[in-house]
Length: 419
Image (cartoon, rainbow, N blue to C red):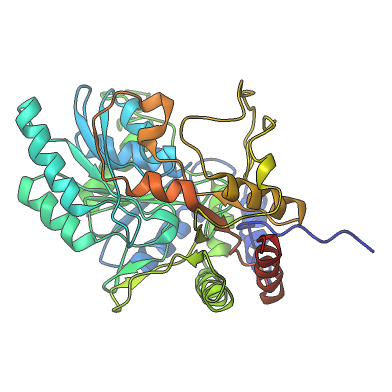
């Protein structure tokens, strides 16, 4: 009997008619193999049509670069403070430090797992009282594709005159009250990493308000070269433009983006249906009422603390020798199998068991306020993100995940539970 094919969280999926190869071949055939060209222009035009709201888009080398340039263009300077969601991936917070600013970490609300707007406003008032000036920017995050309360966050931001840089890297195609994420704030961030809703291998984009903002971002993304017959730089810029090769992949991916969105939502519904009667296992779903339209980039569950999993007694007994999930590159070997904040033993036991069953599963993001590199930064907490981290898990949802795969994943979870 052959070994079962591994089920990945979200594996890159190319169009069936090979449009990605067509555009990439055109780039090679015309020798446009640099960070500009017809594919870059075409991809940006496709993205502008997709996000709507008369926005302009700049294609960049990564979502992290987009966060960086969004914050820079929003006016963040050394010594400033930036309010950012704590429950997120580090690409939301690290660029703040690139600019010499300090992240101020805001905890989540329990229904969306995203930035708590009321805690956000309390933090703004407290930072003004403590520092004498208002924070320089606000960075909400669409965790696993789930929309944040964009209208309330924008209401608070406008009240205090603070620009918003939306991190919609995981939320490509997600909408709040019918409007695409990334188009509410001054800037919006998209990611096309290899495991996102669509991919350019590596890449991202920054959504801007208008032509003037677009032009400024374009300058920063191309090393801020002035219009002389020689290289003149009046400001510090960055080499962040997307390659014409990668943009060719993106143009092909835009032909299947709606299929990808529909697939992820279908997989979410399957998990909701198949796990609804499993005691102690809860599928995280968008709030009811019609305001939320999540892309469900990854489907997530929480596992009650009292659920017993086979092999739970062996959790965290050995040091992991590589990063769990994704292409991690060089990994620094940990000195201990445990940290002061980690998922419960039953979550880890289920992850290990799923891995042995050829299913890629992953803990939810560890909140930034529990990361050693952010020790001592200002935090405004309510306990929500840390509590979810201890019981949460991500399940496969990508275009290669079939209905049979979902049934197999659910059966694996059921069989893992003791009693």
